[in-house]
Amino acid sequence: MCRLYALHASHPTRVGRELIESQNSLMAQSRCDESGAPNPDGWGVGYWLDGRTWCLRQAHPASESPRFRKKAGKIKGLTVLGHVRRATAGAPALRNTHPFRDGDAMLVHNGHLGAFAALRTRMLDSMSDRQRSALRGDTDSEHFFRLLMSMHAANASAAPADLLRQAFTQVLAWSHSADPLAELGLNVFWTLGAQLAGMRYRRSLWFVERDAPHFDEATGVPDAVVPKDETYRAVVIASERITDEDWRAVPEASVFQIDEHFRLRTAPLAG
Image (tube, rainbow, N blue to C red; front, side):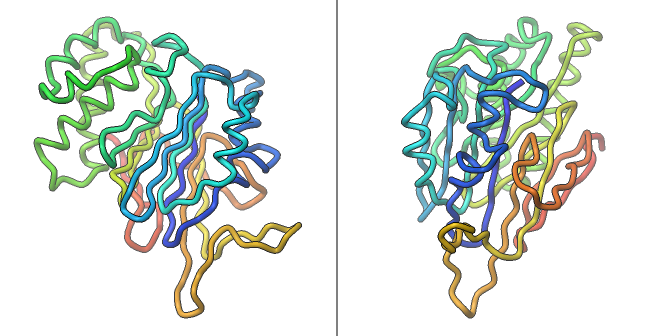
């Protein structure tokens, strides 16, 4: 089913606690998620800091990856996306490993387009030439990303959440046309560096809003350094509750965007 993680913060924030150290960290979910199943078919972490984007990926289980342990524990960013994969469409391979990236834009997906074989041609026909030629893998996730980026290029002033709704509405219509009974699951995080948006459709998704950085109980070191005259804020969103904080469910069938005050703003996917 894959598992997702995202952070969007006012100050550079270390994410090793949530990716590695917590009892239900993303690494732990790679080994066994709350459904009792593993997500062993690859991992990826993308992050944005100082106006630049980095992306680390491997087509190996995060729970067995020395590189994941070494690198993820040091990652610090204003925007961070994390993903551990259970392969459905597309074989376990680096080309099919999330996040998918185009410049500062990155996307991770949890779900399944059951009618993907029929949808693929329509998605390809609706992409720009640039995005079509940029395809490297054969997942439904990357095709959705390239379709979304084509829509963004055609209407760059649109809010990311509105473009997600537009892309979802189109894919949903195509899916119903191809096979009204086909499974459709779309939990998506999409970042354009300084912006983070996403959607929830038929998969679990939780969030927590923070008004202060976390402190490591053992060392007393905070996840973020905040000058005394500044206020820290952050939003963390994940497929499963990672810490013992007061996580809340993202509304089902909704799109969301993190606003300038670092609060999660949601709207229905329909209308």
